[in-house]
Amino acid sequence: MKKNTALNIVLVVIFAVICFLILLPFYAITLASFKPGEELIRYGLNLKLDFSVMSLDNFVFLFTGDHAYFTWFFNSLLLTVVQVVLTLLVSATVAYGFAAYDFKGKNILFICVLLIMMVPFEILLLPLYTLTFNLGMMNSYSAIILPGIANAATIFFFRQYLSGIPKEIIASGRVDGASEYGIYARLILPVMKPSFAAMAILNGMNSWNNFLWPFMVLSDSHKYTLPIGLKTLLTPYGNNYDLLIVGSFFSILPIFILFVAFQKYFIDGMTAGAVKG
Image (tube, rainbow, N blue to C red):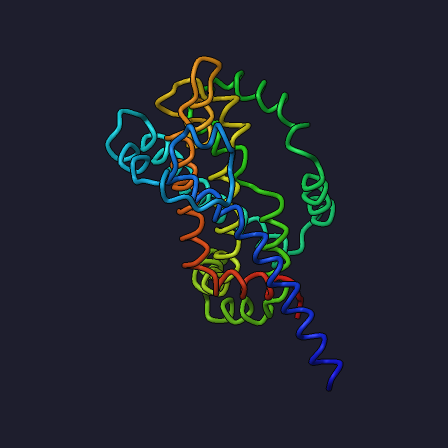
């Protein structure tokens, strides 16, 4: 009994320290968003709470100033929503095929999915760029959305999740005369809500923070996503740290809201997908 109590205390302390270290950068960027850019240049991000230099000027400039921040923000929001929805639908359909059906070459194809998970995106960057250029999709949102909608990691997670669903659900649908598409849409998709929430958060974070690939294919500043737009604020000719820091603070909010809204489903989805049976 004493050992269990001591172990619980140690675990609580460890997780409290981890939580503190995770929240520390958010605290620092929140403080910095109330300080002028000169303070950031002079002292960098710090944890000093100095009310003499803190004001709402950065927030006023964000909402009333002459800049393209909200254009970048809504571009990222649109791309994230579209990419997450398409990725979930396509990846779930592929995973359902792997989990529910037996067909020739199934194991080989699934091994290919696992191999794709092991390949860093940087290795695929050049051939993907060449393909995008040859297809005439440069400087378009389709060039950003299409390469990632069949996400190998998402397919793998959905396949593991579906492997734990009783096959009797599918059999009962067939007995009742439902079509294969009807079984998938009416019986399987509702059961997958927790896994959808988990993958929506993870894919949403990846899409929202994606910088390298959009930077490679987009050339029109009006189509820039938020990470690219914030990067343009730092130039050899002048740095707009006032907008950069408050813009970075606001860029965290959508993902934070998404996680808080789907936290319960996220935990259920991750734990349910981790076991089979």
